[in-house]
Length: 319
Image 1: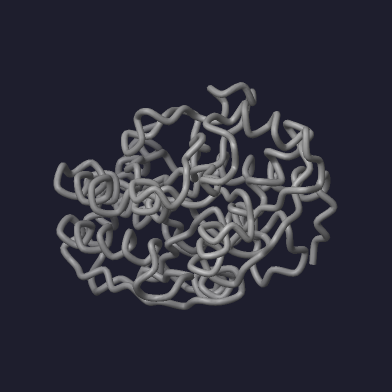
Image 2: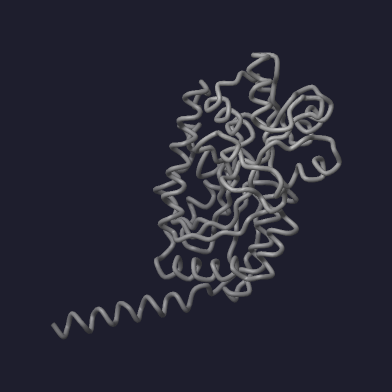
């Protein structure tokens, strides 16, 4: 009995010592989007604050392309907790739901650390569309079946599947007009080439305030502080509807338990810091949030299943 107790104490002491020793060198946070994009800006803000608690630099490494799978594969193959993924709805939600040939397994190859932030989308229409509310837009769409179209920032994005989810829940008919960039999609909407779109809220705020587009509803479950007068899609009558762009940090599965514990503890401290929360919410339009590793793993699995169902119902082929 005494031997077992001593062994348990030694194991606990070793784990604590390992957690305190880690990290002993700079860390790399791999981002699947280009420098200057919204995910990159959020990642850099988080990395800078996180570095203060870890006591080592957290260097952002941009690896854009292939729906963030290049970045995810880089981290999945890493041998320890010094290479981390700034994951998202793309790498651990929609991507796995649409593709059967990803070079990584979102569940097996990663150790979830914590959620970082969420960003709602907002349903906006061209001002020429005679609708001031979502209910009015749905009625107008049903009165003109097949006559309206919507823009997205590309096939397989939240701006695409979020609209397909809305179509499925409301039985409206809208044609999809995919674009390669957000600016092209916004230009189509402003010019009236398309009637409606569901875009990231921060990108639309200047257009909404300038009268270029009209906001009907936000895609998060609750209203956004950025647009307090605009109801959510669920609040507007579409029960159970929720679409948010989310960001989270994942370590490779090879990361040790003490390293994971230290990464989680200090990331939560960083996200809960008033100055970082203010920057994320104020300057970058993101809602800071944290989670346990277990909650993040469950959320990612639920997202994959959700978007798999949406793709199946919309007839979007998996690769």
